[in-house]
Length: 225
Ligand SMILES: *Cc1c(COP(=O)(O)O)cnc(C)c1O
Image (tube, rainbow, N blue to C red; front, side, top):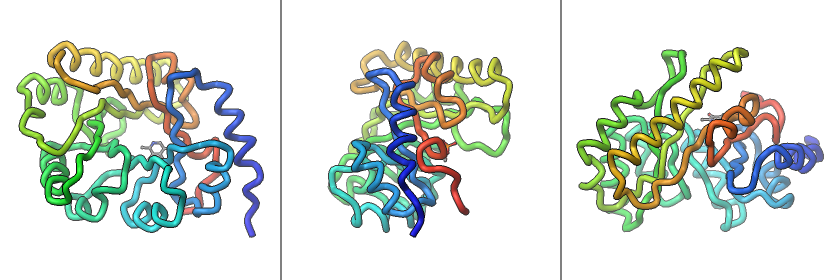
């Protein structure tokens, strides 16, 4: 039986560094339901997963008041299985995916809440819109034809580097993109979430205006893939 006794303590340590008004999402990917429950019992209600098969298996086995965040790359052929489960899909990285989420949500009779993923990091492998693409998307009011999808904000990641100036600059660009979207589409309702910051960089993200941090390792320990 693995030892989950450090989870509540880790969570407390994180909380002391997260101001009121910033949502803490515990990223529980690759960790078992018992680990989620340990954090749940310590008061955490927002959890993040990045694989459809894992969230589909975990969600029904855990308390129904958990707010699940889907944070991984979402393949279009898996959207139907996912719809209805997450509180927030944070990783919308193409207009095509957005359309499919909207279609499948309509078909299921639900409204999906989503974030648009913006790519600013140096790594080429990360998914998402460039800041210009995203501002263009909102300028042309491409969101107006959505019937069953509510865009609640944006999500992004900083470069994976020890250079904290670089990381802060990435977060600043994500926050500036968010501000610019609000300028080009001031009538957007409930567009209020800037999801940025992970275990190793969340204090920098908060300093640049994050409203939601996604923390895995610092709460649950190393993942075993
Ligand atoms: C895994 C993951 C996290 C959490 O990463 P940690 O370094 O373990 O805190 C946050 N965001 C996304 C998108 C992830 O895939």
